[in-house]
Length: 84
Ligand SMILES: [Zn+2]
Image 1 (cartoon, helix red, strand yellow):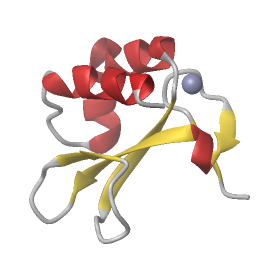
Image 2: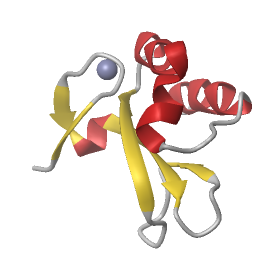
Image 3: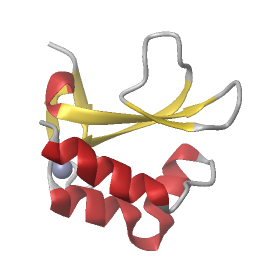
Image 4: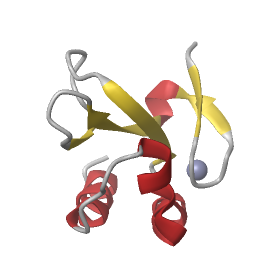
Protein backbone atom coordinates (compact mmCIF):
# COMPACT_ATOMS: atom_id res chain seq x y z
CA UNK A 1 0.00 0.00 0.00
CA UNK A 2 1.33 3.38 -0.99
CA UNK A 3 0.65 6.01 1.62
CA UNK A 4 0.59 9.74 1.14
CA UNK A 5 -0.13 12.68 3.42
CA UNK A 6 -3.06 15.00 2.77
CA UNK A 7 -1.94 18.65 2.57
CA UNK A 8 -5.22 19.76 4.17
CA UNK A 9 -5.51 17.68 7.35
CA UNK A 10 -2.01 16.07 7.33
CA UNK A 11 -3.45 12.59 7.84
CA UNK A 12 -1.66 9.73 6.12
CA UNK A 13 -3.95 7.72 3.86
CA UNK A 14 -3.85 5.18 1.07
CA UNK A 15 -2.81 6.90 -2.17
CA UNK A 16 -6.06 5.70 -3.79
CA UNK A 17 -8.11 7.59 -1.22
CA UNK A 18 -6.51 10.91 -2.11
CA UNK A 19 -6.73 13.36 -5.00
CA UNK A 20 -3.33 13.91 -6.60
CA UNK A 21 -2.50 17.37 -7.91
CA UNK A 22 0.66 17.71 -9.99
CA UNK A 23 2.38 20.82 -11.30
CA UNK A 24 3.55 19.53 -14.68
CA UNK A 25 7.30 20.02 -14.88
CA UNK A 26 7.12 20.22 -18.70
CA UNK A 27 4.58 23.01 -19.20
CA UNK A 28 3.73 24.35 -15.73
CA UNK A 29 0.09 23.29 -15.95
CA UNK A 30 -1.70 22.02 -12.86
CA UNK A 31 -3.19 18.55 -13.32
CA UNK A 32 -5.73 16.72 -11.16
CA UNK A 33 -5.14 12.97 -10.93
CA UNK A 34 -2.67 13.11 -13.83
CA UNK A 35 -1.66 10.11 -15.90
CA UNK A 36 1.60 8.31 -15.21
CA UNK A 37 3.41 10.36 -17.87
CA UNK A 38 2.95 13.63 -16.00
CA UNK A 39 5.93 14.51 -13.83
CA UNK A 40 6.39 17.34 -11.40
CA UNK A 41 5.87 18.37 -7.79
CA UNK A 42 2.72 16.82 -6.42
CA UNK A 43 0.36 17.36 -3.55
CA UNK A 44 -2.35 15.05 -2.21
CA UNK A 45 -5.74 15.90 -0.72
CA UNK A 46 -8.59 13.87 0.75
CA UNK A 47 -11.86 13.66 -1.21
CA UNK A 48 -13.20 16.08 1.35
CA UNK A 49 -14.32 19.69 1.00
CA UNK A 50 -12.70 20.85 4.23
CA UNK A 51 -9.29 19.53 3.11
CA UNK A 52 -9.62 21.32 -0.23
CA UNK A 53 -10.61 24.55 1.55
CA UNK A 54 -7.65 24.19 3.94
CA UNK A 55 -5.22 23.65 1.05
CA UNK A 56 -6.30 26.90 -0.60
CA UNK A 57 -5.83 28.97 2.58
CA UNK A 58 -2.70 31.13 2.71
CA UNK A 59 -1.71 29.93 -0.76
CA UNK A 60 -0.65 26.62 0.74
CA UNK A 61 -0.98 24.77 -2.57
CA UNK A 62 1.17 27.31 -4.44
CA UNK A 63 3.84 27.03 -1.78
CA UNK A 64 3.94 23.24 -1.84
CA UNK A 65 3.81 22.99 -5.63
CA UNK A 66 6.11 26.01 -6.09
CA UNK A 67 3.85 26.99 -8.99
CA UNK A 68 0.97 29.42 -9.55
CA UNK A 69 -2.35 27.68 -8.93
CA UNK A 70 -5.31 28.98 -10.98
CA UNK A 71 -8.41 30.04 -9.04
CA UNK A 72 -10.50 27.63 -11.13
CA UNK A 73 -8.62 24.68 -9.65
CA UNK A 74 -10.69 24.80 -6.49
CA UNK A 75 -13.91 24.44 -8.47
CA UNK A 76 -12.39 21.59 -10.46
CA UNK A 77 -11.42 19.80 -7.24
CA UNK A 78 -14.90 20.24 -5.80
CA UNK A 79 -16.23 18.72 -9.04
CA UNK A 80 -13.98 15.72 -8.45
CA UNK A 81 -15.73 15.19 -5.12
CA UNK A 82 -19.11 15.07 -6.82
CA UNK A 83 -17.86 12.56 -9.36
CA UNK A 84 -16.67 10.17 -6.70
ZN1 LIG B 1 -7.34 15.55 4.40
